[in-house]
Image 1: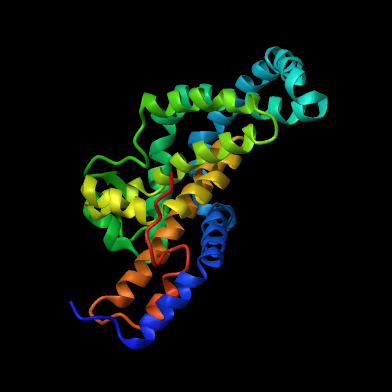
Image 2: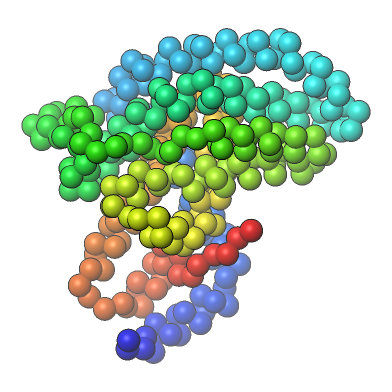
Length: 296
């Protein structure tokens, strides 16, 4: 394999020296995608029927779940946490603890069975809107004369899931909930640990569309593990918002698809030409880091 040209080697050396800054930039960009997904979703009315028709009833049921939890579980847990945190700190931790408990109940009842199909539709429609119809077409029927990307979507021709549902995900939420009992660092740790897994699952649909095997998927996840941590952390915060958590599930899905669209754009531009100095600079973004991360 030929060695990199001198300008590329010089840039690589500067990037290695500036790793802390690169990490901050990558974290900020990946954390922004869930926010961008909200703006993107709201500006496209053809997404609204997906939410109103399918998820609004579930949002109403989630309101009932949170009402019951805050009525019967919040005050006892607040009193217990006050022993360790004091009253001021106990309020924050008790709220996050109850929200996490509600998320466990809601995910266990609804998300794996009712929500995932909606997320697949939002993800695929976003890719179509960004010009990647060829990525979606091999795995579902498309109506090319439809007026918008959502109406273009027909039945999937292969197994379609936004992220694989398993009892392990629910068990992890339950297992890490007690972290909220730890003063100061417990609640951020809970959000970041559960968010890291959430982020790694955010591109499961993309890997399926590209036909990646288990080894190739692991390589892609390892390449962006730092980015997935921060994308998932922000998405997890939104998922903890009562009532609106189903809405944010869809907007974070749109954000994940926007991220994929940018990765695909860069990859397709570079096809068929040698690496350049500009490519190396571009790899410092959250889309394609220049080095692998080995996070614990």
